[in-house]
Picture (cartoon, rainbow, N blue to C red):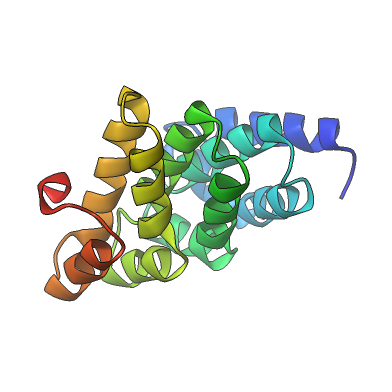
Length: 171
């Protein structure tokens, strides 16, 4: 798994390389970038700096297309993001980044939305919103993530509401 410093820098590099260009995101995912980031996050769960970079990298890799999003979810990203948010509940910036990652992971089709909800993503976003009521990044990111999870189907909306989301957050 490598040292925590090497893993942190690797997540930082993937975060930056995967920012914004869909063909690069696709190549990063195809090369195993999402699996490597999830493994780093699982192995070094207690390192907040690594977790922050890993969450950003996962969020960025989801932007390529539906295939990227499915591959990142298939690597176990939703579960890893939720775990990181639980471990680092006292870090507002990490909570905001986690909400952003959950929102991107749930931003595709209903199957992806369900994977994120089933992994505890809605509950994690609700917990972050509740814990950080004055942090605009957490509030905006958390509500956007919940809206992405709930979008399009009543069943999904009910699942998100069942995790504690308020209806006004989903508009």
